[in-house]
Length: 356
Ligand code: CP3
Image 1: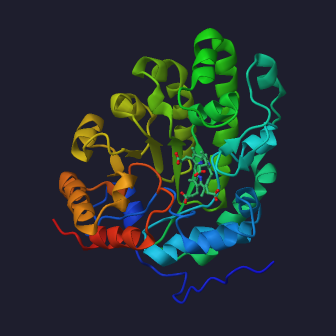
Image 2: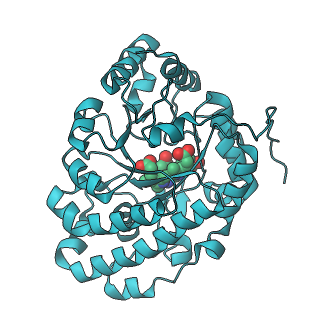
């Protein structure tokens, strides 16, 4: 198969400090680092060209194509970090739940998990072998990326992954998920325990393959009250985060609608916490306290607004960060389909050019 060759004109081995890794550690930087969740994807013509030939899962299964797609936004936008091209649902495949992406419908998991017997039927997963294609993509990327653009690995958090496995796909109300939590806690905890082991092993394998930071995506956890988060989710997310931190890389913990969950997410112990646009950055940071870095938090819908409006909002976020060490600029959630690429690039430049 032929794919576009990478044109890395500069040496991959240089001594440039990474703004992104420095900010994760809350070291002072002169320029705020920026990257975007879902920075690779359908809004980019280069990605759509590859998607004409390969399905999403095929891209993930071919490390050299996954690496190429990972590099597309790095080249086009000048972001300060690369995020591995993969999906939080890939571990569902070796678990035996099945995974398919139906056109326009999002993910479909063919064998949803609803009973204790279903949990017991989940297959053991060895990420080094069962998800070796992810580790291979990471190894290719570490050879291609310059030192000042670190590679972020990721996994879904147990709650968000469990919600897809229980619902069988995307959901608004998470009714089946919550019904299991409230009506059959034994099955819920058994599923969370199993997922925690698999996701921990998967994240650690990514770090050992070369990921220089990792993000744990708990995208939908804001559907829970603080009390339920504490009882049904926190201990599991905490375990994954602690295991990744023990590998000596920065850990980012992300969710949306988490305003009331922030103090508990802090207890989970990551180095960086993602904030969405529903809370002003400084208010979120105040709740979290000064001993953690923050990532965010422009509304992805703003990328459809005129540039002067975007600039107002972008500068507002940077003003709220107030030059305090430990801010990584990002959106509050992933880039939306049809976002104009030029606008995304303009935001990168706005962030890089901003001075307090
Ligand atoms: O950020 C990146 O550039 C890396 C790639 C990435 C993908 N998925 C590729 C992808 C990452 C980090 C993810 C994470 C992911 N996947 C999350 C957590 C982040 C978030 O957005 O909340 C979730 C919930 C998923 C599950 C998932 N995968 C859904 C719900 C969908 C369908 C959404 C849609 O737009 O149809 C996917 C598909 C998916 N994963 C795409 C991409 C680029 C869609 C593009 C395609 O079909 O080619």
